[in-house]
Length: 70
Image 1 (cartoon, rainbow, N blue to C red):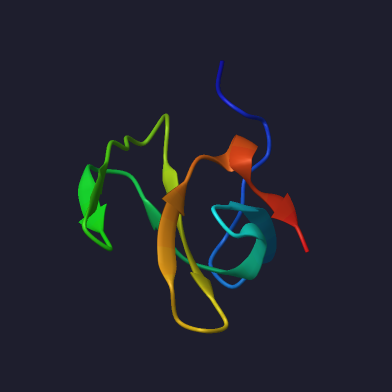
Image 2: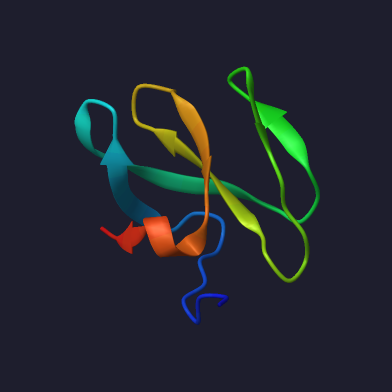
């Protein structure tokens, strides 16, 4: 079931990371499949992935459900 929550470029968000909680900002909304930091992701217009970047420069792709506004 798609999330009702959406984010836009520049939004500050938090998410669960391997090292605990991470915080950063949305730098792109992906609507097609791609690869980031050696990890593939699937995305579509109906099921986008939010490309986020920490203040340290690490990037990841997440579904809206995995993100919370900071």
